Structures are given as C-alpha cells and as structure tokens.
Length: 209
Ligand SMILES: O=P(O)(O)OC[C@H]1O[C@H](OP(=O)(O)OP(=O)(O)O)[C@H](O)[C@@H]1O
Ligand SMILES: O=c1cc[nH]c(=O)[nH]1
Ligand SMILES: [Mg+2]
Image: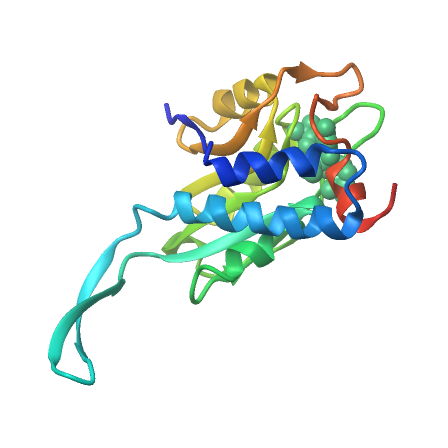
C-alpha cells in the first residue's frame, strides 16, 4: 500500500492560504496555483533517475548528470487540473501532456469521463495525474483507472487539497499509486465539497462562479 505524502514546505503553505481566501481574485488564484504546482512537482520529482554524461566547461572536460530514467507525462483532470500544468511544465524538460476530462454528476456525484487524449507510449512513462481537489475520490479513482487501461504502470497522483474520505477511497482502489497533497482537510460537506477547502477549483480558475 503506497503512502500519502503531505508536502508542507512553508512557501507552499503560505500560498495555499491565499488560494483558500475567498477574496483572492481569479488572476491571483491562477498564479498561486501554478507556483504551488511547480513547488510540489519539485518535491515529487526528487527521486528521478540520473545518468552521467561528459560535458566540457569553458575550462575543462568533466562529467555531469542528466535525467536518465523513464520519460515523464503529466495528465491533468479537466477542467481544474489544467491550472496545475504550466507550473509543472516550467520545471520538467521534455514533458508530455495528456488530458482526461471528468465531471461529477451534480445529483449523484458519480464521475463521468467526457474526454481522453494521452501520449501513445504511456507504458514507457512515469505519469503524474493532477487535480487540485481530491474530494470523494471518485473522479481521481476513475481517471487513474482509465489511464491504467491505456497502459500506464508507474503513476503518482497530485492534489492541492485532499479530504480524508477521498484519500481512503482512492487508496482502497489504487493501492499502487502514491498520493501527494499540500493539505489534508477536515471532511466533506453533504454536497461533496471539501471543508474548509477552497470552493469549486474549476470555477475559481476560470472565473465561472
Ligand atoms: O473527488 P471528487 O468528489 O470526484 O471531486 C473532485 C473533482 O471535482 C472537481 O471537478 P468538477 O467536477 O467540479 O469539474 P470541473 O473541474 O470541470 O470544475 C475537481 O476538480 C475534481 O476533479
Ligand atoms: O471542494 C471541492 C470538491 C470538489 N471539487 C471542487 O472543486 N471543490
Ligand atoms: Mg468544478
């Protein structure tokens, strides 16, 4: 069973507090989410494999290290996951980006796949699935199911905020996928919102409130 990693770097926690604030504008919300996603990706990728290569500095020949392991792909869960891509992309060279569209039926809260386009070689890649919110866990679990069906074997899931209920549900279904989050909040509301949370992430990113 894989772990839940809480990335509690002070800069991430500082920015997360401003993201939660209902007075934060759409523009600032988006910028902060990108910054936090970059900082989280920095932590998540700290175990990437390296290989040695020769490099010639202006002064002499030496040996350096470059990324040498599996190639990476990031897969945002639409819509809100899109708000995390640019921050990650700015950090990771040669990143491939897949997209999976999920929405929750407002009455049943059941997740529904409405779009999926992934790189063809998913079995060759280390995959980071991103969505700011892990609420009931239904969307994330269904998205990862779908991505596994396309061949992906090494997957990590990254959320900004997670509810205990969502963590439990996701781990019940995907024992092989570690969860990385900046915060585990108190609980879900009866409407399936994370409390205290930050509201509807998609609406706050795209200004559709
Ligand atoms: O864990 P769950 O209970 O499944 O809820 C989490 C999902 O809900 C939100 O998406 P939403 O359905 O609001 O779609 P959107 O991104 O288009 O706003 C969020 O971005 C997650 O994808
Ligand atoms: O609190 C929540 C729960 C699901 N989706 C969101 O965007 N926010
Ligand atoms: Mg939404």
